[in-house]
Length: 95
Image 1 (cartoon, helix red, strand yellow):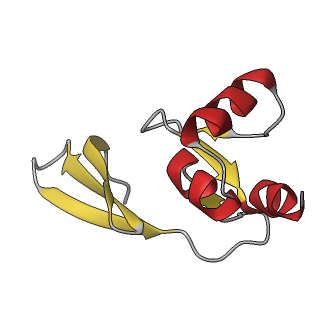
Image 2: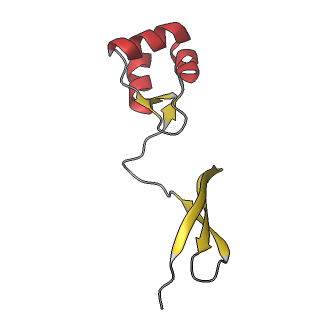
């Protein structure tokens, strides 16, 4: 037997994602929690402020270097904030 469900809410919940569903057959509701387990392709990332503190740079310089491409960074989809990968922070600390 298959059920028709619809996601009615999805949000970050600590280190997991909580999804709220509604059953289209009976109208009942239920939650699921999804947790991302360690993955080799996932890497720790740092904020602009954290990167500045770890490297001794000013946050303004980190932002400028991201803008000009001297620092590789990824813009987080949900928050819109820049995330600098750990390998990039390590590279900056060696300079």
